[in-house]
Length: 384
Image (cartoon, rainbow, N blue to C red; front, side, top):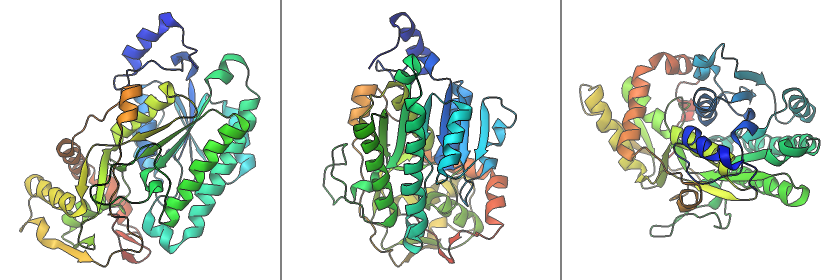
C-alpha cells in the first residue's frame, strides 16, 4: 500500500533514506512517534539513537531494565525532548494498553527480548515469559489501539517485529544461506521462544489484520553491547589479561552485522517494507569464531599492545549443548526490494568496535566492576 504523495516522495527518499532507496509505503509525516521496546538494550539503544538524532523521530523507549538494559547507553539523549523513557514490563497487558493510549504511537518496533543462548539453557522460563507471553501482550495492546485508529493514521500504522536468524536452526558447510522462506528449526530455548514470537506476530496479521513486518538478523556487534557476548568478552578479557574462552574448537561460523547498519536497515523496513513481508538482514561477513577471536586479538595488539600477543591467552573450553554449527543470511531480498545493504566491512566494523571499547572504558567498567564480572551465572561467558 502506497499512501505517500508523489510530490513529497522524492524529497523524503533523498533526505531521510541514505541507505534505503526503494519506493515505499509510509509518508515521512506519518512517522512522528515510534514505540521502541527494549530500547535500553544493545540493538535497541543504537536504534533509538538513530531515530532520535538522525531521523528526527520522537521515541517512546519502553524497557524493563533487566541486567542487560542500561540507560547509560543513552546518556547522550538526556534532556532530548524526542526521547521519553518508560520503564515497563511487556507481560503487563494493562500497562501496555495504557502506554498506547497515552503516547499514541504511529508505529511499534519490538526488540525487547531475553537474548542470550547460554542463559536460556540455564533458565528457560524467563525466555518463554518475556519472548512469548510478552510479545502476545504487546500484540494484543497494539491490535486494540490499531482498531481505534482511523483514516491515514490507521493506513500508516506498522508493527515491526525484530527477530533473529537462530530461528532457522543450523547450516552445514556448503549449505545455502538462510532466506525468508527457510523452514524454522530452532535448537535452543532462546531460538524456540523467538520462533514462537515470530509466529504470533504473523498470526496477528493473518487473523486480525494488524499490519506486521518481520525482520530476522544475523549476529550483531558494535558499541554498547553487554559484556556477555563473544566480541566484548574477547576485548575485555584481553584488556584484563585473562584467559579468552572459545567453545569447542572455534569452528562455529556466524555472519556478523554491525549494529548501526542494522539500525539503518530496521528504519528502512519500517518506512518502506510491505506489511506481511519478512526481510532478512545480514552483514555479508561469515567468519569462524576462532578466526574472529584471532582478528580481535590482532587489532588489540596494534591499538593497545600488551607484553605478549593476546592470542596466546586463547583457551578452548567444553562446547555448549545444542551449539549450532553455522548461521548465514541471504540478504538479497532487502537489497533488491528496499535498496539496503551494509556499509561496514569485516575489517572496518571490528576496528571501530575495538576502538569504541578502548575509548569508553567508563561505560563497561561500571558493568564489570559489579556482580557480573564477565561471567554468566557463575560460569565462563562465551557467545560463539
